[in-house]
Length: 514
Image 1: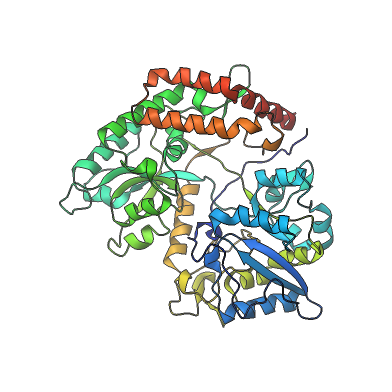
Image 2: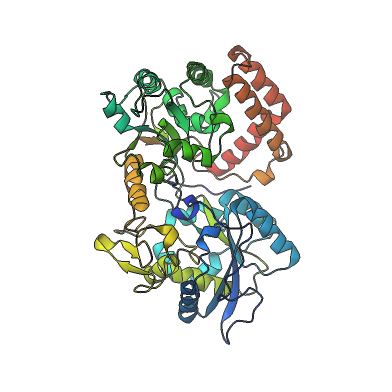
């Protein structure tokens, strides 16, 4: 099997996926928008897409006018069906199995590989040559390379702008409050956490602060991903043993050293006691209540629904990304330029129309229309190329009369702000992006490979393998399982099918790197 070889470039969470969802499970189309089963105007080609962020469905007259502008420019009648993120895959499968029209949807590249192998989606090579001149001109070649499998382009890649996905972030203003320096080492960070726990950094006279927590919905796995760089020579990534074989991070000797420290920190009360059972919303609430000193999260994990609320009571708060130096590589793993794609389904009645819609968004005019609507009606230009909404609040995304309902193509336009809205959230995103991108990074061993897991012999065992390992890690973290027993745990994991999974991964890795 020949997979694609890829260059490791940065990854971030676009505003399209970091905004919180709102609305009912399956949002209905607004009354003034064309329903999916309604005949389009004469000459317009109807296409239907699935969007997993219902907060983009504002149900306003302005959305209808944006729709009509797209149709006038492209000859395509675009209809969007919305579903909650947690229900999106189910909704997609129902639409496809029932014969309901569905032309395009977003999916992770790893899922797109499986969908292509099953004949569900179309390769885009020929369609791009015929209808995608703007896409070929303006989408980064590395993004298309990332979206290629066995020479076939699986979808239109969603470009990312942050070079590392997760990072440890610390309250710089709390350091100032306690007259502490920025911690440079794991030892100094440990002393800082002790101070955050004992010295009332929020100044309310109560013993209610949390030295270390997680964000972005992550729990123990997020701590591993972020702190692995400080404790492990390859970070928390797959590594090569003496025979050149890829091995999981849990089998590296340094993993036990990292877990020993996390167990100690948990015992000392430095880690939020509710972390293991917390949700993204609870983590955001902890930050918003001015209780979290350091947070392991995505770059946006301390901003959306968290810092937004915190700044109302602590206007000068500041979370700064950093890497506490330890015995590890002390660099964050580079992440790919794209992790998801917009795919065209094989049953699509008119793939040319979908490609025309996609290609239109690869012009800056089409990008701005599908993202922010009609200039002079839904938004106006501000200084520095930024956008302000013509709405009740010109800088509040939630108040915009139109926002991103029809946007599917994301391009990092040269010389343009990545998130160009003149709003606090966007300004915070751009600042945090720059801060994270300045941290040192490295290419992990198999960063060039997107695996076709559906072809693995071990595929039926993966859920059980992951569940077993997660359960044992929690026991270890909570002190229910002695650290000395970890080698036995991993041997059991290998015998359950982990050894087969390692073989599968190495087999595909070798095919790519030949």
